[in-house]
Length: 430
Ligand SMILES: CC(C)(COP(=O)(O)OP(=O)(O)OC[C@H]1O[C@@H](n2cnc3c(N)ncnc32)[C@H](O)[C@@H]1OP(=O)(O)O)[C@@H](O)C(=O)NCCC(=O)NCCS
Image (spheres, rainbow, N blue to C red):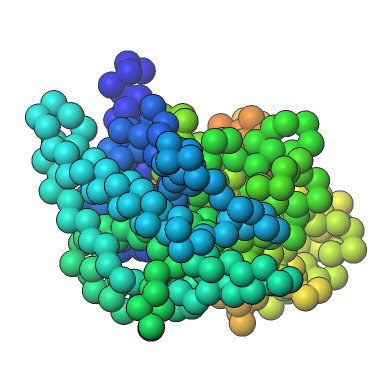
């Protein structure tokens, strides 16, 4: 396929993601280091692209590097206690000035629209305001943190009003107290606070690393909130992991770590199946996994009522026992609530016995199971997945299967076809 052909295919493949992301709220974090990256113009262009695709965007920025430089140029420095910077009243003015400069710079970049630039034609409205109420950290172990503060409340109504109007909301690491004082906030944790308050779909941190790495140095594409043990993390990554885990437990659907240095890392993470960075998800109490012999009674319990109604083909216990390793199941508190099996026939795989427990239908479980069986089929180098169905044709059509003729069945499967059942044949290429 030509390069254009690849683009066209990529663009078509991204359609389900475009639809899934539209009208969802994403909180993006750009730290002071990311804002100095050579790749920043591309990140800004990608942010403009998300905005034009209808994603509701909140941008939280940091300014640590810029503040350090400003203080150094004025021969001033921070006092740091327990890893936190102490914002004395003497430093506060420098900090406010620097953060104001960084914010204006981001606004300027989001306002660009030169012909022949990726930003041409985008007319983005960026709004910032007093969205963050803050409180002082106070005196800890005898040390006064002065104007270093923490989040007290996020004005989600005001933010949502801006998002409803299609604006990008820009939030700086400054918060205001009801008494009119200004507090310097930890921008990394502010981003998590904002995402949590908004119950955002995604919280995305741009990082110098492409994602979290395992002990062999490989970037891990998906990590559950309890799973950091097998990872190799420095203290700032541990901090980020604990913030993202907490955010996931408090209502943010997914958190992501993506590189700010690699062109396209954000788009790859959001619009491709494998992504580019690390996605952090809540531990679910439902588990999707390959079946073991101990699961046979649970599988039988799930499928027998459907066999009795003639929806599924009858299978003997012996057959299920001998083919149990072809089954994938979803288990919830010890109960098997969804199952499906992959039977390879020559270059294709037959998806059989797909069933969800009546009480757990319409929760995308069969969809998850299908996608897990598809990856299993891909690792077996199968070219397609086919299914014979009497009752669920439309479910398969809606999940990318196309009706075919039974003459397309692999030869070794044709002889087993039951003409009395008269099932329809559907296939999905992998
Ligand atoms: C088909 C089945 C596995 C779907 O399980 P599920 O976990 O509820 O599936 P999902 O949550 O991923 O999808 C649910 C969606 O599919 C739709 N759907 C369910 N069964 C369908 C069918 N037979 N035809 C068309 N759409 C169907 C639901 O209405 C729902 O759509 P909505 O979200 O627009 O309301 C389940 O209904 C089942 O066990 N059916 C009986 C067994 C069966 O027919 N298996 C296929 C045999 S080959």
